[in-house]
Length: 238
Length: 252
Image (tube, rainbow over all chains, first blue to last red; front, side, top):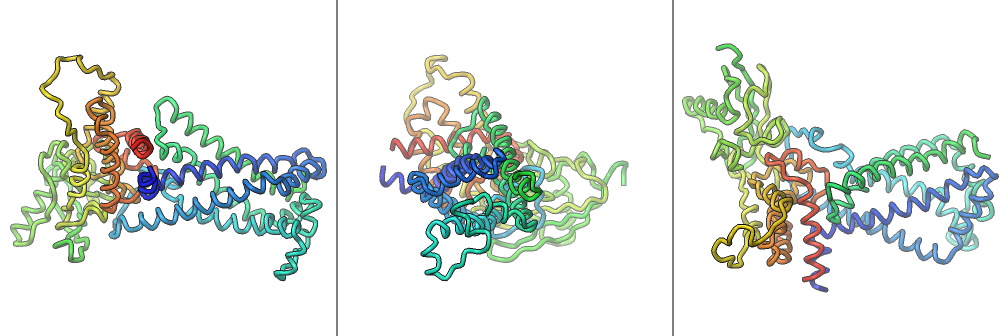
């Protein structure tokens, strides 16, 4: 088994299995994330949201899962790079003319590009919220590395909802978030059902269900995420 | 020019050998009947080239009835041309219009090196097959009918997988030049039958290892291969191989 499992993970099929597995793990995280976000719709001046955000920031189990989440993201990215590098060698001489649109969807061929856009978005997103939250929580250490918590983030610890409103008052940031979510939508649209195919789950009875579940999941998750910067920017949520 | 005949401009990949660089060369062809097959149009062009003392275009072809899988051509960016479910020899010139420019290239993949012009070396497929695409147990003389019960659906699915002619259109079409559909078809045709189950785990492991060693890319589930496959091999076969491979690595 030990010999077998290492050859499994090194094989092209095993690598896709890891992509699917980490992908579905990240997909499950998005559900948690969007539920926390949706707490702003209690419209209670961020009280419920702050409670949920506080739980996420301080609960020890969540902190452990957070490490797993970062490992999952890193594994997904590293595996994608390994697969892409292997794939780029598979066709050294390109076609002069290639009509790919008739046989496959553009987003299924652009997972690497969409993933790169998502990574760029993720860096912006972490810099907007995750880093300031950690700095606010462990603020004294922040001065040590010469980082000054920017205006609006100082209250991240006590009132993350206020910090949220500050970030989404900026139309440029709202636009970046919406573009990031468009990338996420198409990445999920292919990724969700693709993971099941990589696991070997393709059946005439269940695959149509998995595909429509993937579509509705991608659409709903992205619309819910998008609603947050939009409603806060327009001041619909107090 | 008789009624309905066409004048076309062909841009065809010419390459003397795998070690030399190739290029697209333009050839005008005149008075092409819409009832000709695409390969017959090539025959006409080659006769003209020979008459002019030029080297004819080398292309693979054998049965010319859609079952040998030799006629590997990417025509205007699609394997076997603009129609689905057919090989190049089954493509007729009525699929084109008078005055069209048609670009013809060989299959492009690291694992399919060009031999000359439009002919590529597909022996990588043979080497994958040789790693397990067969049954080596002695099954004895043919049994009486129904001694070995096989569900009709399994027999049909196995037969559909066995319809693969190993043409390589899946590889040519795939953005990653992946051979998954071919290998999956060859694994599936045995995986579905009791005779194939005896060697199922070693078969899938060895064939996948050879596929990776040949330098084919990996599957990213775009399903383009399924669309361009002349024999309609289904993506379900790829899922079946993923399953077989996972199980094989768990139990063996």
